[in-house]
Length: 419
Image (cartoon, rainbow, N blue to C red; front, top):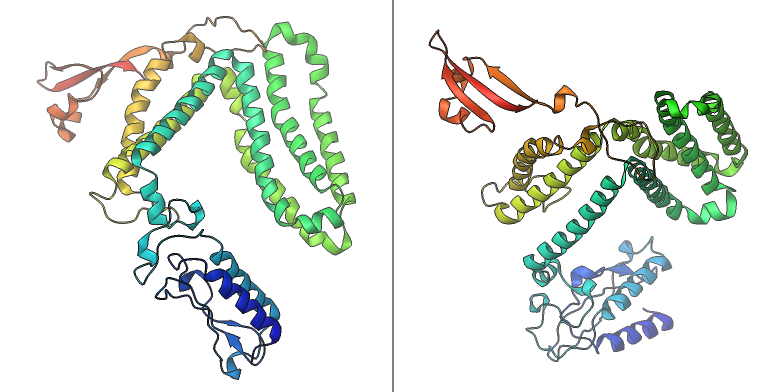
């Protein structure tokens, strides 16, 4: 019941498939049943023959199952068979034993390998080496910016926001490119205008605050008073351009894209509104949270790769099957330990804890009177803590100086450390 064109196509595919082994041609990789025309169907099955060649057979199907078929479905299935038959180069493996369990050829493309083969191909040692080198590189770059000065840190934050915004809006832009490039003018321009508006409004307040707090910059106060009006003007221009570019046939799509752009701005700019203030209030408020994230990720990975699913078999989250409870718990414990010692270490250096109000390309050493939060202090805990925790547990707490007994014969504990 096949047409001449269909028979010609199937013969061509059969000829190509005969040159491939059946090691990786599985019925699960292609549609086992697809419609070719209204009165007939093609069942595409791949099996290992005695010589190891893949065969494509055709069978008939009832008319009741083929009433709503289209030529598009036929084309998709035929294209799938052609793509699968071309994924593997010729191999010497043959015979009935050549099946899915035979494993991929070492010369085949990576995408033709199963997940199990990929995991075996990438050893744990190689993964650890790659992670170690990339981690050292990223931390080194971060420390370079950190010790270069506050101005460079703010520049790094700004370019990070630009890249993040570009990547997020690019997702939907690439998806709807055919509609955008032919029908909607200034589509990308309006998106970036909204970004400029958000950035100016968010960080111009910070610049004005620095100018007001630095007497050497008071000559700029005359210009700083126009900050609010200029931000409103940029907003108006952006709003008018957005309205002017609306198209009658695509207005719903454009409003949808505008909502997505605003959502991205809330994620990239909105939640980072006060990060510049944190940088200039003391680098520790910027560096410590970032380093804790680094430690959390590192300890979670280390605990997961060494103890993963050895104690708790239950899946952690469905969205990421490789995550384990051991990794989650190890990451939390490691972060608390690292936070205790890292904060104490950073508090020793005035470069990390002193605030500043200068925009300098070549900053000098910072000298300031330390805030009490960065100074060592002694804290006396009440005796009631021994009613909750035994004494040997309390002795394990870092920075415990002494455990003594007062005149009332009740134990107290003295801790020396930073708040």
